[in-house]
Image (cartoon, rainbow, N blue to C red; front, side, top):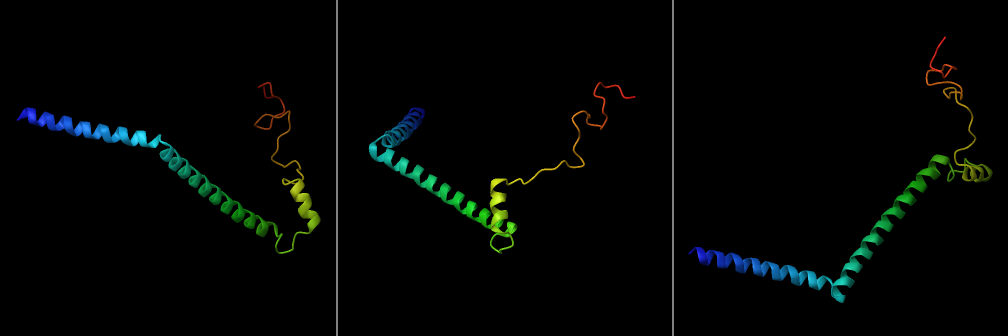
Length: 113
């Protein structure tokens, strides 16, 4: 009885191995390679489409936020904003000077008098 069990286990393992090898071999045939590449191409197309949709949505949000569609931003200001998106920068009150440490003291030697 034990021999019959091990023969059945061996036959099952053999069938499993043959099926696994035949699937792997089929993937490396020209037809298998073309189907794999086609699925990769489809995935890339879907990703590109999602990215384009996100870009269009964000562009619309920016147009509304900047008032480009409503006409509140004149063309000259829009052009200037496109050339320098961050706009002019001025020192903020919370900016430190170069000779100050993180506590606002001018002496960086570590001695505070």
